[in-house]
Length: 74
Image (tube, rainbow, N blue to C red; front, side, top):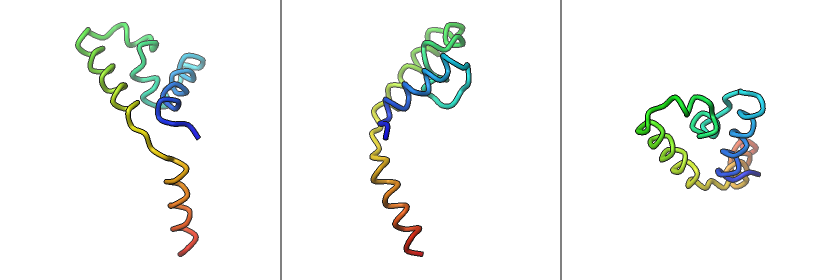
């Protein structure tokens, strides 16, 4: 499973290779061609949001395991 930073990097790589927007990793990326057209304030805001998202550290395996247990018990 990917952690949040890995997921953001994956989204950025998909965007670079295909141009598809599959999440904030590409939408907010400085490597996104649209980023260069933004004002300095908008770029700083996107940088802060991307950094904040990268700090979220969800244990996806644990989350899915708990959800599956709940589904199986019904």
